[in-house]
Length: 513
Image 1 (cartoon, rainbow, N blue to C red):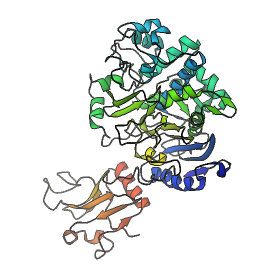
Image 2 (cartoon, rainbow, N blue to C red; image 1 turned 180 degrees about the horizontal axis):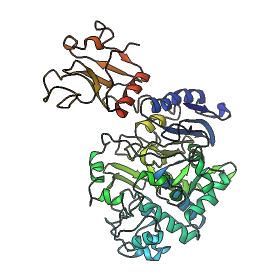
Image 3 (cartoon, rainbow, N blue to C red; image 1 turned 60 degrees about the vertical axis):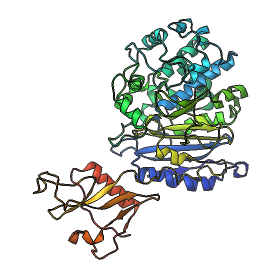
């Protein structure tokens, strides 16, 4: 269940063909539900300060009782960092403070423990070396976290490398806004951006909005995504990766963020809650030169802080090439993976599990994707990249969208013929010593009878390499048929769903279209 909305606009004034864009994006969005197991999600695309495509679909809850609608809100995780960075940059702009000035000029105690020379630019681009804390402090205790940051020694010489500040970043932004603007960052966000633009996007959700929020669900168990070293270190106590994502400690469980009292907390690092449309509208303002709906928010100089790369190279935390401008993430020149499009001026910020938002000032495009079923990836995965058009251009935003996110060999199921005469579709043999079979060992006839492949098109193929050896017999609807039947998307989805939710695997059969 998904719907499409499109706002009225003068297509002749837009460089994107709106109808073509919708035709390209809608099937990819639908495929996220049919093929990739999305529960509820929304996507919003703007250009030239105008909304051109909005899609939403699925459900707000796992029981599929509450449909995802145009007014549904959801947690956007680290995409909140982009909002927080914009607040600090606006404060610096209004107080005529350059990002090359030292942090300690505005926050004297920050200069302790060898941090006196750290600049605002280094802090905003994750070069400060403060991605983890030596002291154990609760993420809900703001004063304790700030005190720990003041006493923390940099984990590397500031300015010599960069590493993603997963949890500490929001506190660094918030404290600087408080010291310069004399109000909290969440209040600054509401006053400067939310109210003028009428955004439904909060850092600290009002109690009255809780009924609209989709329940967020943790990623399902599966093969860890790449980079393998990063995800391996994420589970090892004592590693920099582990310390980065657990300090300050608390709120590690995804379900904790479904508590209304936690939604109300102003957690700048990962606590933003809102709609895809509002998130994209905010980035549309940035893509439109810092102006929208008669309001001027940013000067050309401040926008240049957002578009100019300050750090690029191997990230000490993510262990892959990443790049950062002043507070925003960009595509690294060392990476083939493009999550912000082709333009070198693009910038934005993803969120854990799949949320993603970015702005391309060169083409005036803004994009946002939000969802409630998380994936194991902390950076945008194939679902989000396919909708965003990983190799997109100004002319055809999703020209290569059908190519991204449909990669061969991601997951393989096999047909296994058991000695009991049954054939199953699953990853491993049914028997191998289980009580379901008389065999106590893995006999030769428990051989793989073929592979269920994901191909570069929506659907799948069962390919049998040795048809003459397949003793499937009565389980097959037509034992003499050609052994290359196509499985359409609906059959594929049903089979995978049964595989994941049932202890008993489905009987394998031949399918014909």
